[in-house]
Length: 183
Image 1 (cartoon, rainbow, N blue to C red):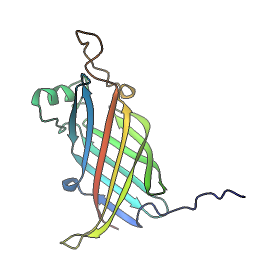
Image 2: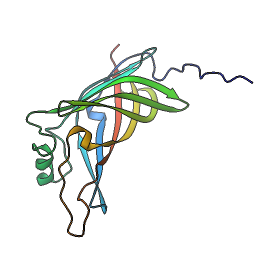
Image 3: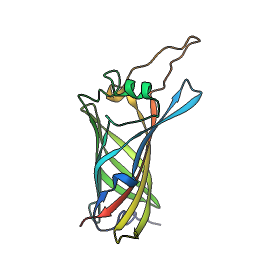
Image 4: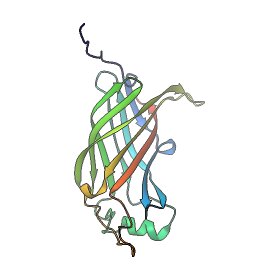
């Protein structure tokens, strides 16, 4: 009995697609004291998805406009203790590989935060392709991962009176993209 390698599968449809900021989100989730999940959102500034033989995903989000819906916490996140938005106004991602594993899409790439890039692996799914009411050909992709924020120098924390720390190092990242064909 021989084992056959999985044949290459088209991960994303052929073409170039501009990520639509109005219909795309990048969110982070972090536990606060291990008791509640705080959710934040950073708006997509730009991004491109390329399908076909050499699929790729790249994009940037605005640190200066991230929100957790709490002005004090948002200001702290934009401060030098966290993202240092004045010096590093954007977070960037560029894939190095995009592959299909069954119905799952696996994207490996470099995530750059505060000028430091580290490889990450995101997993998710291609949601499909459709034409919207205005004649735009669109695709949808959802991806997620968990990262260790300390790798990017995001190490601020506070001790709790009974021991432990206010925040864990693990942060969930979720991205949902709608993209419009440009080529």
